[in-house]
Length: 334
Ligand SMILES: NC(=O)c1ccc[n+]([C@@H]2O[C@H](COP(=O)([O-])OP(=O)(O)OC[C@H]3O[C@@H](n4cnc5c(N)ncnc54)[C@H](O)[C@@H]3O)[C@@H](O)[C@H]2O)c1
Image 1 (tube, rainbow, N blue to C red):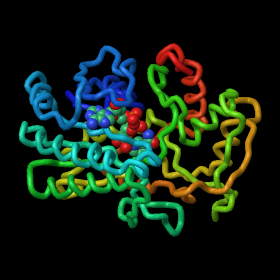
Image 2 (image 1 turned 30 degrees about the vertical axis):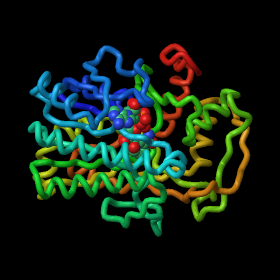
Image 3 (image 1 turned 135 degrees about the horizontal axis):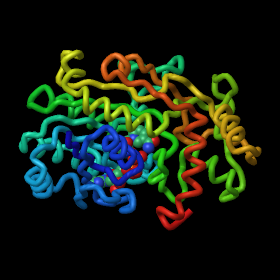
């Protein structure tokens, strides 16, 4: 199958392209290189441009009339930036997605897989969230994800558009062959911070919040290896029509996580075991917007897509550390 990936030069998009190739499919990348590095596109079919450029979309489809499905990953993704610049986030993530969906339906390409996020969920009572759990985004970024979900549901009800919405939890690690991975110069997520502290690129790793009602007081997450996330897309592409038929609906939402909650302190312990040395650590109060966290109920992913995660947190840690040693060669910076 031939698959259009918007945002295919990004972290998850580049690894997903690799997984699709491994399964015998052909990715076609559309990316503005707003943030994604050109090095991640490699020798793939690539169109540089914006997802809302209708003329470009028409050209892509004219040149690849056999595109079966679109994976829409292109987005701005930095939560604090979305708080500071909501207009840019709603414009780029919501308004541009509307143009993309409308044009692709017009071009006869109605199958969409959308990258949503666990950030749409309301803080749960326990720590497990299912697709039916209440939603309440806590940032403009997360609101853009929920709004696009709603756009997809409404378009699916009214047009030929069909949508599989994947809510990713906390992707970690890199491409198993170390050709792509996290490329932010100063990653803000927890494993990126750990790697930087371990390699002496910052003085210590800060555990933000140690008074949550979790096993050890630190926040809880569902760290899912990016290769597993990529494989979930292969399952969604291959099982697209069957999944919606089983669901009995033109759209569906599926959690993409491991189903296991891991606290920040547990991640730290796993990291130190793989790294072989202790990492300088301090604790600090939660930052504004920080939450205790959640992990995925993954029953639906298994039932609808036949997908479950296979790799462990230690695999993700090892992969992130190996990638940290490769970044300079691929990206030109550490
Ligand atoms: N990384 C995570 O922890 C995480 C968690 C949940 C959901 N997601 C979602 O997964 C998707 C991919 O995330 P990622 O971590 O790979 O992000 P990323 O920033 O690495 O990738 C996004 C890509 O989209 C491109 N892009 C942005 N706006 C564009 C536009 N208007 N037109 C064309 N290209 C554009 C960027 O250049 C970049 O290559 C995003 O939609 C994100 O919201 C990510």
